[in-house]
Image (cartoon, rainbow, N blue to C red):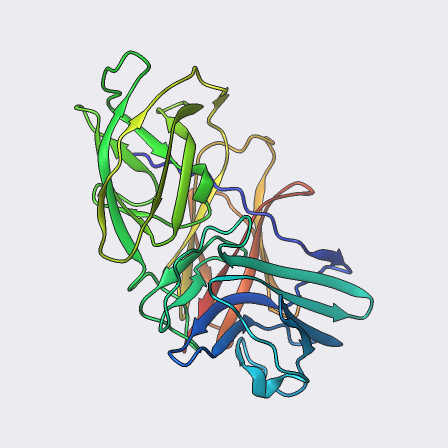
Length: 338
């Protein structure tokens, strides 16, 4: 069965002299039982300074063991900074040779937060670079993030404006489209069966949904539904029915390119798998960068499945861009283990 996943992933980078400059990115924040915290950063190999900011103030990182995943706490800062899991906005500012980048996340009851009711012993984490965060009951500080301890289930029916079941379609909640979702039926999109029923595992967080992308084999529509809001914890199973209230707001031919990597992490060989049509109608190619912005490889995609020999790459995290002509369609990352 053909799969569709609607992803919008913006990477704030500076492209110069064949390099991508990437500042420090929040990977995970752990809240311990005593009210302390640990911050895991995807850390650039060069920067002039990095500042950590919260509502309590800000401080400079003055001492740390920089690695691909760098752990920061107050012992690494010039001043004490507190994180309030009940209401805060946490920012990481990176400065390097005149370049600047900020990565941030709001938590608790802070305006714009979708990470509420965080408990001591939990962390908030993200799987993709610049992807959405989720709450995790199995923190992986210092190691690659995963979805263990971070999934709950929603299930129910889809109804149209007449109260009739919407059947035999797929949907994507674009409110959280940057998260890899795992469904009982398949990975990537959620299936609505012949009775209008769906069942999906999604990541733990707060959701407010009133707009959903409904897909068919060739097209997709963004439809309005009665607003549903729920907080999903690990192991929850919540009945959520979606009732359409308006006609679609947008009907677009499905032509966005999806690219996935397998296996990830990789050792010697990695596969780049693409699907759907390239809307720019020009050859696709992949460029792989180290975390410092050095180009490690570039190659054209001449088929839907491209095998690439990555055995010469050392252990670490790598960024890749999917390009069409001079346009970057997608940016993501993969890991190499030895």
